[in-house]
Image (cartoon, rainbow, N blue to C red; front, side, top):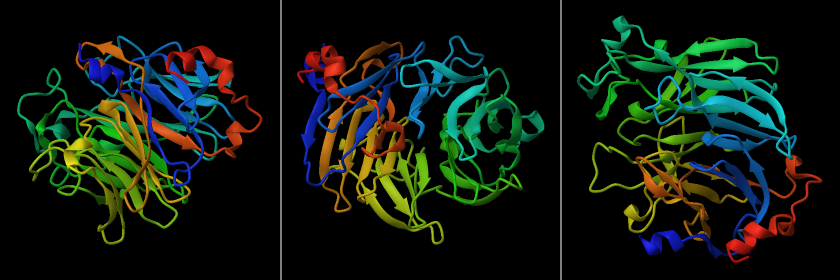
Length: 371
């Protein structure tokens, strides 16, 4: 047993005067609980969910939890990014809304109009998939390449908009990573609604983030190949720049594997700010991960494979660090404490107003971890 790895847990660093105050939400990838904790690492709320996450959960402004569950077995069980169930539950965990789709990939986002957008796996017609370049030859899934479609779903379950993103791509420029199989083209892993209603998305295995014109359904902007590799979690910042998490897996030119948070100017494509560890390899997750810009200018980063969350200043100083203390066994990743992403909510977040946030309410779990 790796004793050091299993005992590296909980809060490891906190500079209160420089960190952004709030509550942190995360869902261990292979557990069934979603946790909310304060800046001291004390748990203040727990949602008991029926399935392992597929792969994430977010707190809504109404105080409900929007969560995706991984239905097993799904139709594409070997695809890591697969869910099957979207649920909204209240503070006590009671179901408010659900949407089931066996081909839901894992991506979901609550839109401002109250609808929910999801990404789902869709088989690509052979006449198109045969034109896709790159990937490991002969690795289609039973001869089929899968792509991602987007669907917007109302609270009543009606599909009111959809976009098969693979039809909007160009096989000549949207080239698969040569180290990845040809069973999927792009692996869409994030969607974010912009102020004008357009959608900012991330296509993992073509190293591309893009903006989809919601009205026309076409790609109006794209960026990334050769600069980032297998990225996640792009978001538009108030200054008009885009923040994303660059995983760095299968980099085209590299002296070693490393991940980083990157802020770019979408008008020029130039990197305006980045954070990487020193040495760079000390921050690396080949799957998942995220970066959230906080209101004080700091950036909250999730290093999924190590279950590590860290907050860094614009000057790249680490002012808060926490390691997920929950470990689970997995047939591929072994005993691990992975978490897809972490979200920080300020104390005045509407969804927290009037909620009981006293660590004593779940003192048993805090006692286990030494609080």
